[in-house]
Length: 83
Image (cartoon, rainbow, N blue to C red; front, side, top):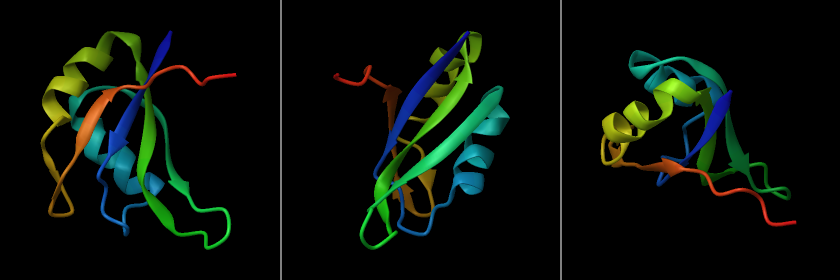
């Protein structure tokens, strides 16, 4: 099973690869994606990292409040999408 983590307050320059690389030292990363503005294609400053279930809690503890690209990021378990 996998869990999805919400990652907020990311620098505009962060890409999918950089996001995954930031989390990799703390566990198994399945995928990552930066959410972009549909019209401009620019990052909206947040993204999601899909991780192994067993590593999720450890990753939230390790990464929440840490620095990525000079900004203090917010990490928590993503809420399910509202239909």
